[in-house]
Length: 432
Image 1 (cartoon, rainbow, N blue to C red):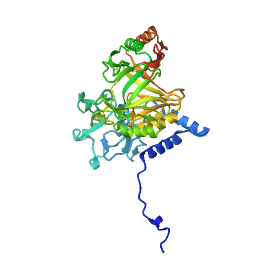
Image 2: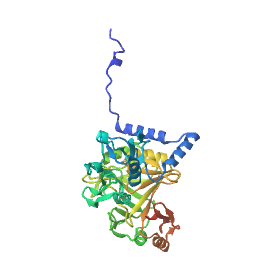
Image 3: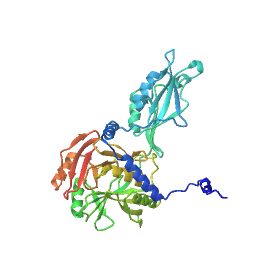
Image 4: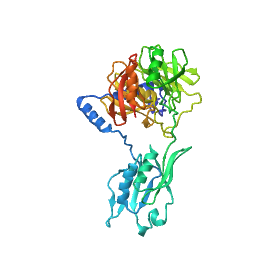
């Protein structure tokens, strides 16, 4: 007789879940995990957020498949020098041998670990100076090669090759006080967006004529015709693509997010509770008009050739006067917003410097242009911060042309002021 439970012994064959179901389940789990529950947990999260809101984001230093282990002629001095010159951080306490020499020490440099020890002639372990010069180069990748190079030279390093631009990036070479050769480098500057970056921004406004007059004066923009009679393109900006679009009562900065696969992203948006139209073929690629799950409109575009920047292989140029330095997404609920955009675009979030404020990250670095999330607003909107060369002059122009501008305030990154244009559209100005 056949055992009726034989079916239970059949080998289990995994089946890939429906992608829409998986995305919806992921979004529900994100909301549940992000939603604070209970006063004690909320208080702990607030304290942790306050500690994490330092201006510099700390990377987790780990050992990789290949790591550097240096022999130096004065390990104690080397530990201090690398900390001051390269921003390294001690990783535990050094191991000190009976004769006082450091047998092992570790420093965190960015996301990597640098190990070092004093010389041990009895083991034929000597630094480059004792051997007559370096036999290798250490490749150090930094956000600002000029500043790091200059600081190292000021602290006693010998410049070997000045900082210069190359096809593969900008770099310079030094010999540190212990004889080691360092190639200090940064990736090439590029305005090409990555997947999840903002590739185009259009300021929505009720009256396009009044808007062109106002922003043409305040930001010294010049314009070319847009894709329709209500559109204008800003000309002459070196790094960003910005426009104006009239006939809109909704006062917001409309963001066009670059994506590598528009069809997949549309599925994710819909699964996360947003709206996404079917893609249309435009001169700049495939495009889709979207709305997030709290009513904020935005769009997607996939370049015709699919060419997007590779994460970590380029750095973002500093915004020029008239360009966007920062975008703030003002939303009713940041928990919902974080769940939506992490599901739809792969964005990541870290605590900001204001209550219920969040920095937005893409591929481990900040979204380009720099973007933040701020909660507690009745209606969702994206608010830009424009860079100006002289904030006092720009404030005068705003007020003289029917807008409002608060007195400027000093911030760690520059001077800023909160404004509205002559049609009530909010924006900020910043002199960086």
